[in-house]
Length: 187
Image (cartoon, rainbow, N blue to C red; front, top):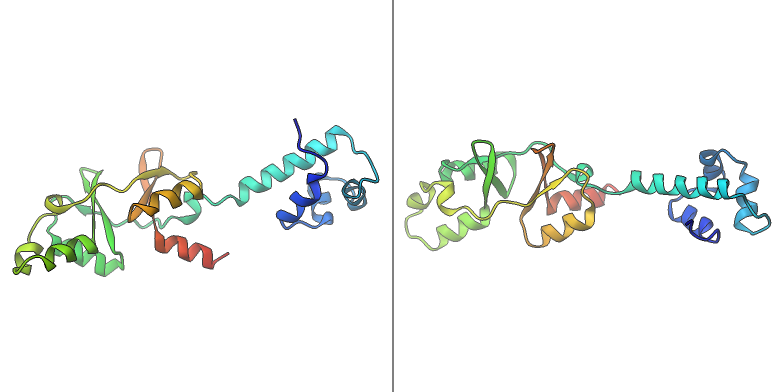
């Protein structure tokens, strides 16, 4: 069942389309769109369906997904890497957290906060920095598919440092809160 015809103008405006642009997409005249919106004509089911199908297609294209947000250069630490190396990787790449892998499987995560908390509780920094990642790692970051929508990603980032993005079972990117902030600045 189609939405009400009264919705056409509201939907068109919410998508930032002019009557002329919508008419071109639907392959009708701009005057027909104007007449439909002002209720001066009762359009056929076929035209109304085509209008709403066009709206649906445009909404899908403009939907923010993990693929739109991810950073594709994922830097991993290995589970046997010393914390010293993890810190060097973070500093070198400008990250505050890293996923930990073992034989190409994500097994945990490490963050600057975790390392700094350990250092603040110890008198021997060198002892902490020589620990291996698996000895102090936290839970692995959640993994979403690249077509996952923004609401799910936002929810996951409320309780995680990052979200990993997969495509066909392979990690292809990472999303952090900083990536979300960059994306909102680009809108």
